[in-house]
Amino acid sequence: MSPNKSSCPSVVLVVIILSCQSVYSQLQVGFYSRSCSLAEFIVEDEVRKGFIRDTGVAAGLVRMHFHDCFVRGCDASVLIDSTASNTAERDAPPNNPSLRGFEVIDSAKARLEALCQGVVSCADILAFAARDSIEMTGGLGYDVPAGRRDGRISLASEANTNLPGPTLNVNQLTQFFANKGFTQEEMVTLSGGHTIGRSHCTSFSSRLYNFNATLNQDPSLDPIYAAQLKLQCPQGNTNPNLVVQMNPSSPTITDTGYYIDILAKRGLFESDQTLLSNAATANQVNQNARNPILWRSKFAAAMVKMGQLGVLTGSAGEIRGNCRVIN
Ligand code: HEM
Ligand SMILES: *[C@@H]1O[C@H](CO)[C@@H](O)[C@H](O)[C@H]1NC(C)=O
Image 1 (spheres, rainbow, N blue to C red):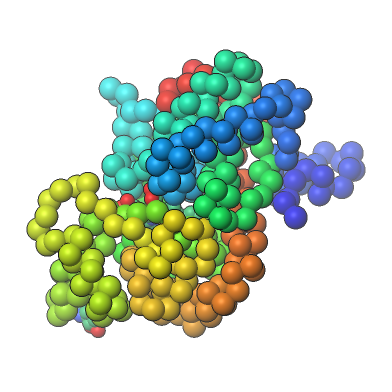
Image 2 (image 1 turned 30 degrees about the horizontal axis):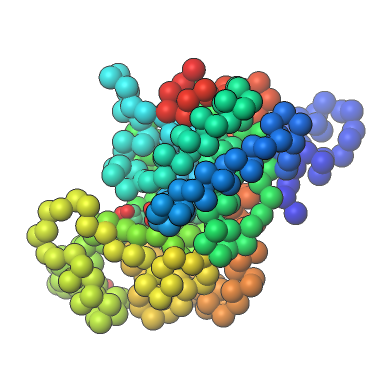
């Protein structure tokens, strides 16, 4: 049920057409079927190659799509390199050094430029790659409406203000997602993205060592899990590359293990565990944990919706030749 242009009545009233276009994205499934029919196949091939080298790129690409869409819409602004005069999104603390998988996008783009120059946008490549990553890790595949165009602006400051941080509570998370047009239930559904991947110790070490003025350790964290995390992330270790797996019960599979871990007080971030602190979101966590089939399809639908945030279409933006630099 992806909202697209065909949902609009074909009435010739400009007013109606305009209002439809502001509600429904103009993206289309199979957008490249005539202009570059191998586009989705080539992206999938590059994601698969990257995944075989390092299965972690799947998590990296799902997160990269999220971080692209929440900042200036899904316009591949997250892929642009910083320049002497501009610090780009990818160098903002929520993205650097943690975001990964850029090389997969670059190799897909290089092949697509060789095959159909100037046709396939970096923003679409990223949207396809995120879908493929979900599928390769056992999640439900979905059709990706495409036709996004690439933006020409990327500002680190916007990544800092638009991306939620790991210490947010349930009300703050709800607000962050509401700002992007998502319900609280969709926020809980999308948080299930943390069913795969890793985190740097720095994203949660305050829960282990300096939680607040009265407690060193976050009491909402299972003490056995906390002890394991302390071994992996020793206090005072300044190595910025130390990482742990998220969703310890099934870290490489897109399943509902994330919700099962939360119920066991094993959500890695405060922003994960906080979902139990509110009756409505706790109910969602319970339902998702118990109904993996339902969550899979809710997650796919929420990813499609996320992929439509603030997209540039028609003649807006550009088709970048190199995803790292504006034309
Ligand atoms: C709800 C608010 C969210 C917060 C506060 C949050 C925060 C974080 C943080 C701090 C990390 C660890 C980064 C690191 O230190 O390496 C992370 C990783 C990750 N996030 Fe989120 N995130 C949120 C929502 C999402 C959503 C909506 C998705 C996708 C649908 C997502 C997908 C991921 C993935 C896949 C990883 C693992 C990345 C990797 O292994 O490279 N997150 N997130
Ligand atoms: C520390 O956290 C605990 C548990 O969340 C809470 O009960 C306590 O009031 C907090 N202390 C301070 C000083 O904020």
